[in-house]
Image 1: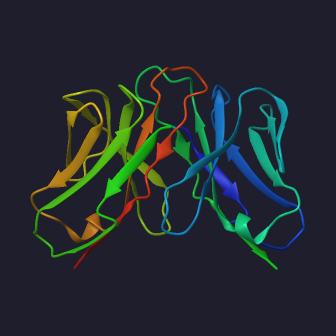
Image 2: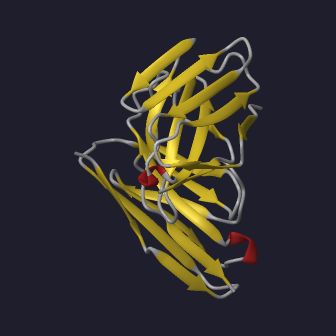
Length: 113
Length: 115
């Protein structure tokens, strides 16, 4: 069964700084990695995905995937207080019916003004 | 645009009492539907999924049941609540197109406290 570990558990950064979040997974055959953002008392919201080795950039977000080391990272440039939330890494195989990603426990990000 | 509405926002219930939670998805026909549970400090755990009306598959046994009476509606229920049922319940949908780009769209959740 897929195992997903996220680090650090919590991260505090000043406004304007780069926030870097990490996720390792256990199954090298996993094909899809999504990052979700979850604000307190709300459901997670899909942020960015990556499917192949390398990096992907969307606005202030950059995600890096290294399949050889089973590692994916999310970097938030120019972090804002509104970015304060829990970030969840979700890893899955290609869906063919029940889409059942394995979620990590999350990284709690606090961006202070 | 698709919207997902989940109800109620929060519930405080006694052990042994019944429970019914629901969600409705608008703007998407024949979505895959899911119930997730998130214990405080825990990971998201899939409880049920449904690919079509009237068909629901159980993923984890937690003395809960689910039904999909309409294409756009998903219900989670139990006749007798346990203390261990406390947590955050999330309804979600996915397009059901398969492949690696599938993703989940979550509702706002229901906070359940069992006393």
